[in-house]
Image (tube, rainbow, N blue to C red; front, side, top):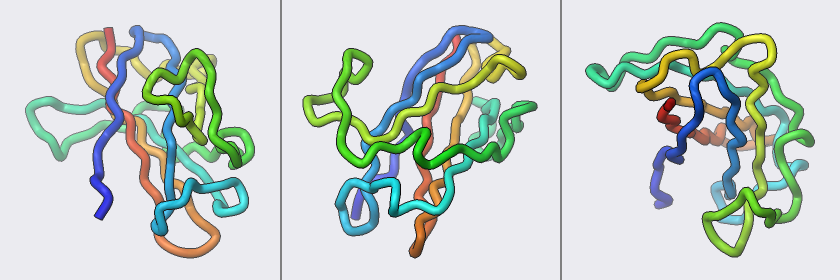
Length: 132
């Protein structure tokens, strides 16, 4: 069984974030654009005292994204990817031009992506961001 874990990162208060990951499907192969019907994301302010509590951030609740706008059919390598030499197939630059996502410094936020495949189970990808 693949291990479920959040991807940790940091961002500036009232800033944006470029979120990248290498995402594989249930069979272990990297997902491609044609594998997905839809991608949506939400941002939540977390409560460090209650792991079940999270507050949706205004303007970042269940936002649809273009599959072609966030997913690549081949792995990408560029200076932003520092995890390994293989690369990423998912990249989203969080748009904060209309609504800030990270408004409280010293707190943690969760960005949750829900990738709906053409068939099968929803793929959940989560980033846990510490705001400085």
